[in-house]
Image (tube, helix red, strand yellow):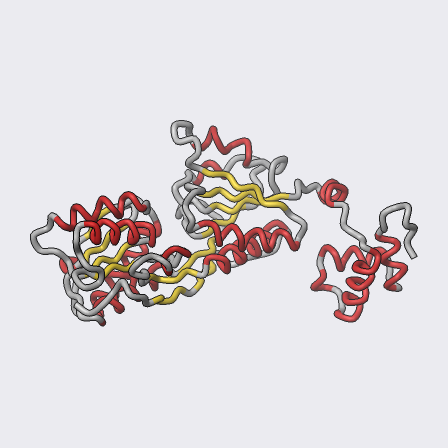
Length: 337
């Protein structure tokens, strides 16, 4: 029995479970290496005593800060919410906190200056980079914690990547639209140099080629992943002499902005023009018409990125690239040509 006057200690757990203090510690820090019956006995003793880990003391012993840094471009973008939730779920189980920094919050200050103070083992135990536009040299400083890239990536940054299969998503989009009979398909892309834009365009052209079409059948129009840029694209499309019968947008926000602009101008979606996006953000299912899109498993991507980072923090070998499947989510914003 524990003394009700003082908080329960690890020795109390060990005594109740009939194991050593070292075994209790292993169950807490690395449960996978402990036999299941022993692990269950210790977990039951922890629940019975109400013991909680002193995170501050543990971090001091392990020379850890107890937190992971996530670098996110434009935190207001709803796309990142599920990724961050997945990251947080994994870190919480390890007793680690999540610090999120918006890399666009100080647009007139160089990223090296704005972020350098965070890239230190005195501030975080690891870093998950969700912004592929950041200079790789930013992470080459002495004392930088282990780094994992997720969602977006920089080819120059030598760090593991956890990605959705963007090229496969582009192919799925092309197959869906050509399968509906569309032959004049405009591609509303993200920024030209963005890795997501490049991969989705590559896959989209591959899918068009399967249907006997080429790049000339799918002109590009550049956006910036924002709802506003999608809305602005509507006016440019309306001004075209030979309008497309379908538009594939590189993300859902641009697709929703585009649909709003087209519908306000009196067009019917999908009767006059089909529109589809990429990402499957929550609002895509609730806009009118409901948006056909490519579904990324964003929470899964976040969880996997956190797991890869934890492996790196433990000094384990990890795969260079982890690629996650995507899938078509057909709704009512696309129809036959």
